[in-house]
Image (cartoon, rainbow, N blue to C red):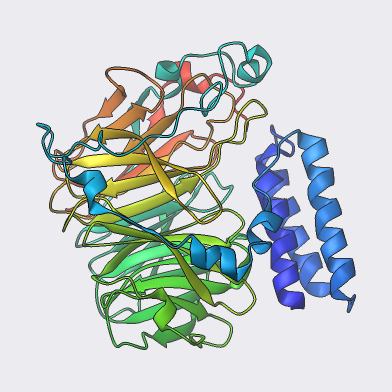
Length: 481
């Protein structure tokens, strides 16, 4: 249990790390790495009550220091099993009976919407102090990405996912159908591929960085999950290879934020599985994570106690996970669009002092990107908005823009099968597109921002990775979280 407690303390510090020394990113990186080292080296055998009290006080002090409050971890842990059982309701397909009448291929207007909270999910126009922190520029100016910083072409097949390291401006991971994983330094002069990780025998389907960026987990259609030590870039190595217990393709993976020893992975037989990467063991019972179809996407809420999984049948299921044992409890099921794959899930909570609204971003292969409000601790989803995007045949991904806490308006970015990258303002009425990047010659699959939004990485079906830079008007400002 000491290891779980260490991970919880580190996760709390990592959440607030972006707010420290806003003009000195190197100090932030050094701070969080040193914090991780001290937690590993100075573990004492305090009783569990002292640990709980320390975690509570640490969280309160950080909230007071930075004026920002994250979702309450205790609220999830306090759920009793009877309450969970009574709330396991499968949302009816009747909610989407009229789902496909619109010209764009999908219409979710029939799904019940929860009224917006006062002020919406982002700061109001009166939030002058918060908006001043990010320079007071308009959202169109903030996302005026027009210049190409660099183009990588090290992969021989589709780059299905790209992901910047946590709180990092330069380290980028790219996974490809050619069976390799590349790590790039996009801020080097010139940008370079630092190393190629080889070992998977089939297409690499997903990746995730550990909180401290010293470990990388990857999944593959060869039926394995691999754990890589990337702390020393000149000598990366595979620490562990774990075969899927169902002997199925592993199609997605993610670290559990509340316990860095746990990884969730979705396979081709419709199971969401929890893997202890320290032991290489999948805890039992494994049947709790069965959702059917093929699990293509997974997202974890910041505390790590709530997980969503999406499959190729258009279904999203929420789970509560016990961070200590890895046991999953199925909570809510939502049928979005029959036989239309859920190819990407992303969770985000606004960190504004004026508003906070946990939100799930969903790519659905019915020509749509959906934004859902997370309405309770069981992961119940309420449709907030949907956007038409060309998406039928490929595993497209989207992402929230990282710096969205203090602005009027908030953006998401998504790939598209029309070879464009779209910036969409989720608060704008009418036409939501604020920018469109046209540099790829084929469907755009992966998108990822570095933490300060100075660079955007996009990848495509032909294996090309483009690093876009913000234009001078958008970059000449004091970016901060």
